[in-house]
Image: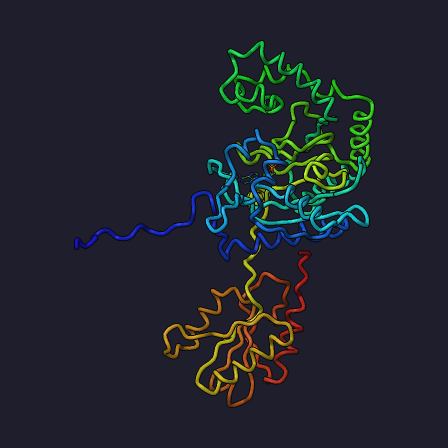
Length: 445
Ligand code: AMP
């Protein structure tokens, strides 16, 4: 047998799928908490659907000729039963599927939200990953235009609570199906005149999904797209009325927007109001989030007809904006790290850690890395790296006096100078003493 002298391949994560390390989690948690608090303020309730769905769900909702369905889905056949499954590339379809399956609209419309990983086999680059995270809302059973404006206002509130600037709102209306059909005919006729100039993607979309030619990023096609027939010119009175309704509610709430007649969104299920939040701050990936109405979808997936709208925002893209704008919040170190010297102190520390946790404090007890005892000074280095706010020290003298020493390790909360000095307190007073000190947890999120 020939021995393989090569080292085994280094194991790495899957391309385009990122680890979120503890040092990054502080910012993720900050954003997630901000999002949740806003969604709850508008009465939206959390729904959690599985990552795997039957492939047919996405084919029937997102559309057979969209990029997601033709090129980007992680689909496979379950080897145990031959079923065609797909890792969700987005979550509207699954939320609608769940709402139908569990008859969620039986007693009236529902405001729902979700957060979690989505999967698309795209070319990874800055702000574009194969596993990425979206937060989304779905308002099921509402006719709008008030609810269209409501979901947009929620995003606006998020940007302002997070202090994010440079995010613009673009709006359009795709009208009803018959209006889109009339526009489509004229659009094809118009694009056919330039067929020689179209790139391969646009030629391919010309007869399958001509609306998508309008949002081409190819600089050579910008003039052609800009002068193409606009869907808004094909809207009847009702669609225009709806669109104007959204706009006046937004204006009344000081939300600025621009109408972008070329905004079509990449998924087939949209109609009427569509919108996108865009920024110039993320290079090529300028879309922070988007959404719109998808009135036919519930019926199309087999449910009792009900009107609906929603949006999805890309968490990684918002995080990138946040990282640029704000100092990164710390990675949520615990409240207390306990260090000790000797066996008696060790068993006392163990009991003390449990008692402090009983009072609601987050406590790490120093544990040996190699079964040898380590000096208090070395343990204090571990305490420092842990990110804890306070160290509790139990040395020989503390054991004799039935006391503990407390030392402040961080200074990023409002503290008095007296707090900074190492203090001795009787063991029995420790919990109350620490709880009072740490009551300064006054962060908004
Ligand atoms: P979509 O579902 O395509 O309308 O996307 C909604 C939002 O999700 C986008 O505006 C992005 O912020 C985010 N997003 C979509 N695809 C990706 C991706 N591959 N990587 C990171 N974020 C994405």
